[in-house]
Amino acid sequence: MLIQFSVRNFRTFKEKATLNLLASNYDKDTRKEDNITEDNKFNLNILKSAVVYGANASGKSKFIDALMFMQQFVTKSSKDSQKGEPISVEPYRLNSETENSPTEFEVIFTFRNIMYRYGFEVDKKQVVSEWLFHKTKAKEVELFYRDFQDFETHPRSFTKSKTIIKEGLVRNNALLLSVSSQFNEETATLVLTWFQELNIISGLQESGFKNNTIAKIKDKNEKVKVLKLLKAADFGIQDINYEEFNINGLSEEVKKKFQELKESVKHIDPEAFSDVSTLHTKFDSDQKKIGEVKFSVQRDESNGTMKFLYLTGTLIDVLETGGILFADELDSKLHPNLVCKIVSLFNSKELNPKNAQIIFNTHDTNLLSSGLFRRDQIWLIEKNKFGEAQLYSLADFKSDKVRKTEAFEENYINGKYGAIPFLGFFDNLTYSNSLRKDENEK
Image 1 (spheres, helix red, strand yellow):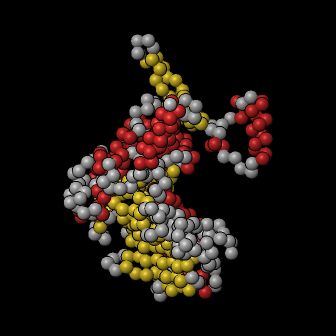
Image 2 (spheres, one colour; image 1 turned 90 degrees about the horizontal axis):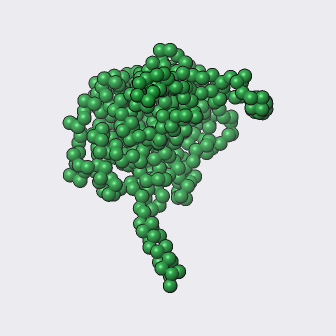
Image 3 (cartoon, one colour; image 1 turned 180 degrees about the horizontal axis):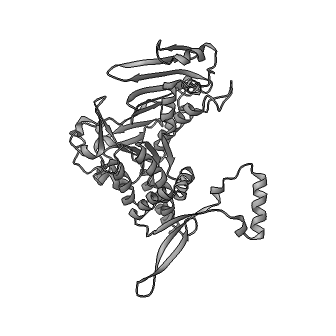
């Protein structure tokens, strides 16, 4: 499970921003049975869901981008770049102090009964520092620490890495963790596996998770799970089927254009041209069922139906494996009540027995009045006048200022917690336009 993620000097985050999923003592009696899982080995109470609010351009998506960058750099730095190639990290550029300084990432998580703390600093040229600690009992143990190309490793752990370092196999623009995993170092492989299994999606682009759901629809047993979620969402869908792309069904003109496209592109994903069909009940004039009508998801279903359908595959995987889902703009195209139900899946002890986690950003303030979240699950991002984003939760306020029973939605909209846009200019704009109109009428 994810315990904490921090980033510093990345895009809009100048100072360190930390998302902490340890439950706060201020809310110890609030929704404890549903929203928290107890890690008895390390004596921790960990939140199963969190939501992030903020104005447009405040940094909500950039925070998820930071984790995505960390994930991709961990999984690909040893194989997707060559010596001397730049690292595609983007520091905070609105300050002369930070524009050429390194960017820092760190994550704390539990995986297979071990707690890990892993992080690194990079600039565009090289890895500046890197570290890995683990905890199997009470004490945290350093497995390695890197300062540029100087390495210190644990005398009895991370043993394969000593040979890797000695042979000079770790480039200055690659992570020791990534290289060590390539050489089957056990701990490095476990940490890399955690990053590989991390689900980070954009709610604006179904292409990022569409194929996963299509693969499930093709499987008879998995299709039942997808259909169950669709029926629960009340879309009126009775069945779903995969419709494989068939060039023979096209007109000669379209066939010709497709062949031209195929010759100009090295690889064409057939799923991009395939479709999913849905079956809806058809009624007669007396509202009696007389059959079924087949719809194309791409042509006939709404954007919201299409998004939720393609999202089901990821939801099923994360819930069944006890995984972690980060979703940018989860609520896009979806009804607020449906988003509430998605969050409820993760908060439920019965439907989420393996303690999967969901962290997402949204503009949907209805969730704040849903009763789904504790104060420590509600996070906000606000930019100051220098363009620096700051991340904080309602649990960071004094308990007498933000009470657990108060109207979170109303108070947020009214600006009590910050992290809302200042729109006073619109009032002045309206006044100026009315003045101009009055002058023209004279």
